Image (cartoon, rainbow, N blue to C red; front, side):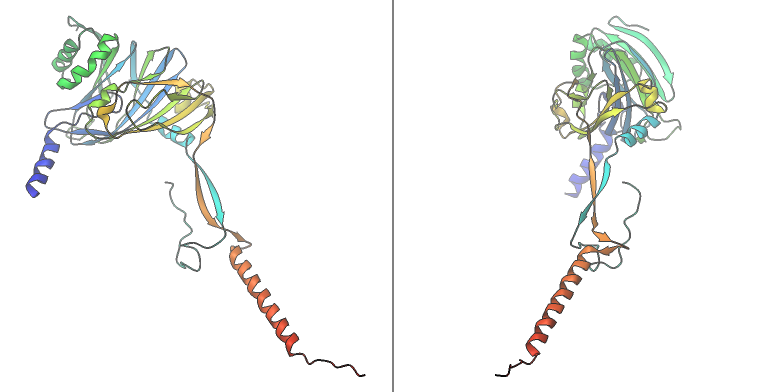
Length: 352
């Protein structure tokens, strides 16, 4: 058993882990990288789509590359890291108190040493490949490409430092047949010898599109379960047409917003938009069978509510149950005393 466990651990260190929430991320050979979580903000006005992506990665890779298919000519720029903090604040669950009458664990008299509960809330041209542009954006080396042959695309990528697997070349074929274009990115930490880990710098990709689509097909190459968080900013509430092989998407927030300044306003142009926040899990990425296409649904607002149970009290924190029980006991004692007194009173006889 020990030998088997050691072999399994060694294999995980040598074999690259192809994982990404909306593209394919490939580390150098003999290194590993995994994308446990991808969070993206998508802005769509009916003509133009902007995707701002932030990867949360783990592993020992010092360099990696990934490729993302897009349905139209793309412009690429660095994203604002503050965008996701702002969106998280806007979609934060509402907290409410829910009162209960009888004491529970942590309430007096069950626990006399409880606290008040305060704390922190929870990156040339070949025969079948066209190079639209190549640029350096911070830690990213970005190439924007067209291709008419998936093998030629794979050959260009490998020749230019983007290592690919045979499976990835196969999965690119449907996009080549639909004449999509590609954003290929190489990324490395600013400091030499530092592994890619944690939240990477967001990247913003903009392209024309008359429908809201979020590329996901290449995620079927992932070796581990995937998690996707999606913020959609459009004119109306938007939801995926189907689950594309994952768990049913969960809406965690839906509502109109109007930000006049800050990172969200830079993405929306300061205009009123409808924000929909979605979470989806992919326990078996190999079952992913397409890209997310989102459709307009009824603008029904929704916000998660987290209830905090609190003991019902009055005045200076006196439990209502204690007052009630005390009152009942006092009334019972008074009644008993009255009955006893009545029984102990001598009878008065009247004279004939």
